[in-house]
Image (tube, rainbow, N blue to C red; front, top):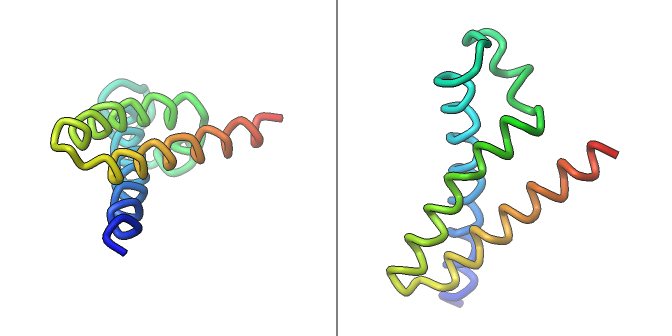
Length: 89
């Protein structure tokens, strides 16, 4: 039961981390303003660069020996990538 809970925590952490990373990238490095964030946030390049934070989160969980949470982050990253790949087709 604890393994499923840790997997879900890792998955949700991965989704949240991707959203935070995408918004940080838009705010810090793009030419778009705050008003344009919602419309531009769903573009592939912003989300893919935002998912780079998942890499740090993944290794953080691995270093703390929380393998199930790391697995959840990996699953979240793969699902986000698949959604955007399918969306681009």
